Image (cartoon, rainbow, N blue to C red; front, top):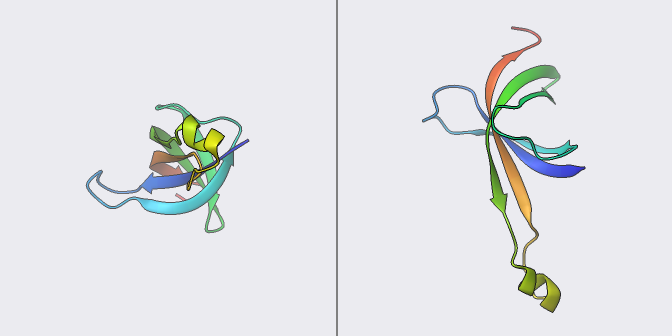
Length: 84
């Protein structure tokens, strides 16, 4: 499992992304993948736009000086919900 923050685009791509919080994925999705996510008591359908990776240098990890943890955020376009 990979925990990633889900950022959702619900209007124009110029609008601010909605941060839906952390979700567990079996593996990081690829652009174009369709995902289904539960949010605010509804089932939502999204299409992955991109994945933003925040890596940590291996040298920092080995030296024990890393001040952050490697992570990723999944940006996805909202395409509908179970109520729409």
